[in-house]
Image (tube, helix red, strand yellow):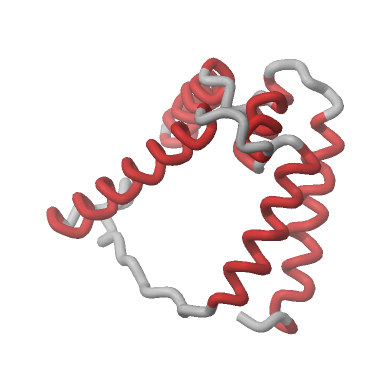
Length: 137
């Protein structure tokens, strides 16, 4: 039953991403050229909603779907990890024209060449899994 609920939520998310043009290569290109506020508005809205939801979860001790307490752990404060990771993520996003979420949306919308992007996203994740113990975290 949960799988069906997650599938429905994913479909609604995908439709929202596609209709808001957040999966549009043109909109992403505009964002990286600083020509349009469209994507910054979407990302900023998501950031604000995320901050509010985390605060609600913390203050009201909301539990997960499985009834477990949701815990937040502080992360290491290291500037280099964010600069290097953010740069790699941004370069991949700019080159592919899609971040990981819209990849599935674009494939579902019929953009078959995006399967190549999905393949390399999975390959990159696999390679990271192989070398993560050797990286400075």
